[in-house]
Image (cartoon, rainbow, N blue to C red; front, side, top):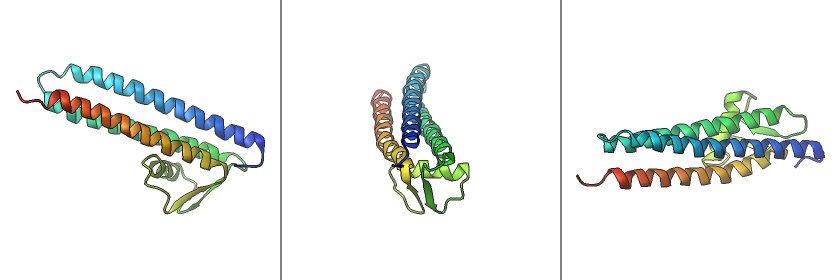
Length: 148
């Protein structure tokens, strides 16, 4: 973490905001998706496909949300840096987020300094949200892939 209290506080607040938005988005997104899928009564198997696509879109939105958090955090003085193939663009911040969210890990981009707090929390949250989506998908499959 950064030696300056205000930088650490800003990173913690930014992380809490990103987590709150991502969890809220996932909750409301899956809830809305479940309601919409219930209206596709005749196309039971297609409901599974729509559910998977919907969950993937939610994950992509959450990755972009955390990418924005990295991008904002990196604009703060003394909040940290990213080494490797990182040119400071927003899309590079989204790439860092995707590698962290999916727990693939750091390879050609690595966070340093206080922004590692965001990365650690995003990895745990990504694991949880992916499991949540897997549970949702399993439930849809169990309900809609039954023999006729």
